[in-house]
Image 1 (spheres, rainbow, N blue to C red):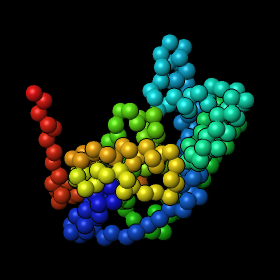
Image 2 (spheres, rainbow, N blue to C red; image 1 turned 60 degrees about the horizontal axis):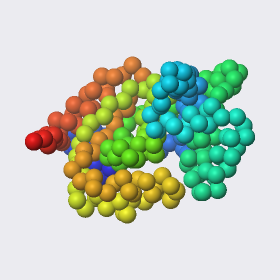
Image 3 (tube, helix red, strand yellow; image 1 turned 45 degrees about the vertical axis):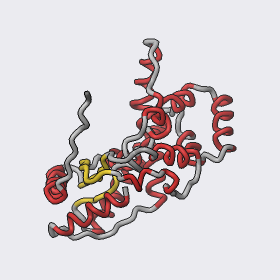
Image 4 (cartoon, helix red, strand yellow; image 1 turned 120 degrees about the horizontal axis):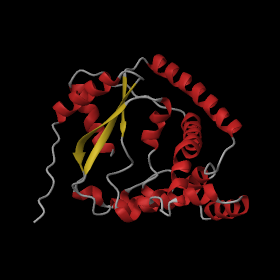
Length: 245
């Protein structure tokens, strides 16, 4: 993914785009995640999943654990969270803590925090004087079906901007090679269960497409499309699906 991002940066720079590094604070990223998970679970995923259960259907695997917590009493929740914490899965623990029904007063507070963070994000873009952001689309390539319960929750690159209502577009720019399919080379700052799953998932991933995301301000979808077009015309990445005999 880092190689694909660097290739995209070089391609845009060659077209005359001025590329400047930016960085969001860890506090803002964590705050956005907490707000997003609380709102999306209570306003969308929770009610939808309840309808599935009422119709004797099961949710997708990636929602399974969230819904167990969402529907459990405080004793079961405490035991489940304790096991997650003791096994060293800190990222999963932080995400799981928010998987619970919230009263309307708490949801109203989340909506207020969302608005405050949206105003802060607008100010950051003004201070940085930028028109668009180039970022990874995902932590790796398309994940394997058996890893969906774990890999399917890695949507932070996308839900961050969904919270702020910023338009985003994804462009495939490269593909993995044989040297990059060794999952043991994957490193992060967590070294938890999700790290191990990611390493395992990367194995045998050669020739899968790598994509980047272009983000712009609200109501500036044309900027997203324009940067995507410039990137696509410069890199000219194309893949034909393998023929099935």
